[in-house]
Length: 253
Image (cartoon, rainbow, N blue to C red; front, side, top):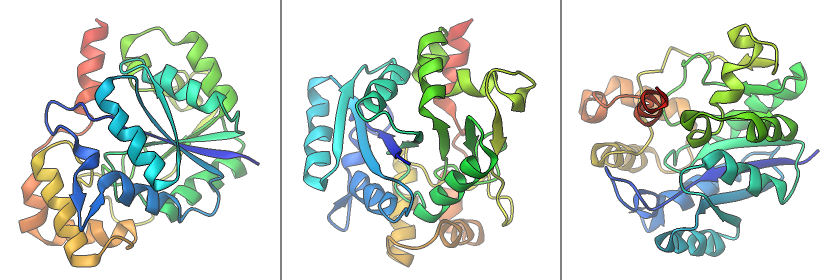
């Protein structure tokens, strides 16, 4: 069973340029994430999927330094970038991650993978219903599902964000093309916890979490700290979740 994790990364960001290369305790956010992905017991390979823009050579070099493969493709057609990266290996399943989520939890990744395998679905994630923190988003789907989306997805939002075509045409949304299931949190509803990095305030939050607990704690320890400490959670709580995807949908019209 080949299970490939792909994390998308680029240096371009209007809100926080070079964010995944910013460092905490001499480790880049990308390095922190890769090390946490490596704690997964089920992932066979990791690929960093970046763009062909000149400045994203820095991402490729960082991936090489970290000892993981990389693929460089389209900046805006991220679905194509994912598909072309995955096609190099043709895994049974793909795990989609984003590199602006440095504290992604390897054990949680395995739990979502295990549900996908057990239920024999085309798509399984903890994002169809948001009960986990923003920054613990995990999507697992078969390579065949990714390939079908690559062939058939047409809308800008479907190409920029990889999985909307899959989700919107799934059994979860009363469609029949893909069988999908959601993975729910067994803890308190942490959907308003923000552990992703889009803004300078987000980076400060991650820095405070790592300063308090280090880089190897479970996701729910960080989440609980965020909720219980206004001086941490209050820093970035006003930032809109999935702002980029919302913008893409508007551009479909």
